Image 1: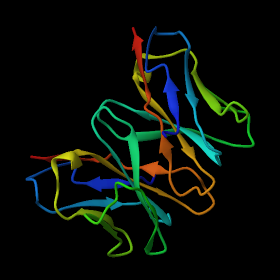
Image 2: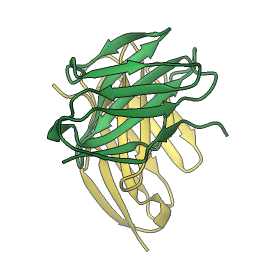
Image 3: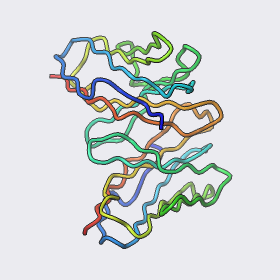
Image 4: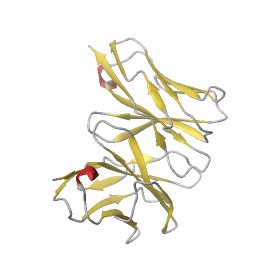
Length: 111
Length: 113
């Protein structure tokens, strides 16, 4: 079974609005990481939250983690056109050797 | 800021040919990874490498795949006899001891014809 499923699969909002993406996972984790990928490009690390943390901020990003529900959310506030990209959650299981990825949310910010 | 680099950015090869994808991890990092992403699909773990040996590998990483750290800077992924289904973007990543964040290279797009 796949770990790390994001929803929605696609999200289109107006510039300036907030964007929220969710991620669910199945097994126990050591940490959960969010990455951004611009079309056909590399994976850029955004933020990491550990299993003993509930919320973390970085600039316009806010990540929450609910280990009881095995879910996380990524909130981008005051979205910009440059935020248009695919966003992936990736979980680091207890072994921490590999990241297990979700299918991603494609975010489009309309100017 | 240090970054992971990968070469080439795009590799086109004929089915059955061998390819070597190259990565230069961040210099003080000790843990190395290869992932792949078939177009439009999830990123998939292939293999992790530490202390000059494979730590973990996925089902995708069969006998056709191998990794090597030939010197103090390069980390390579070899596919011995490429198949059409090997066409994907291949990402190298590295991390340092005590830090969980994996830093990714820009990827190599492999096209098998």
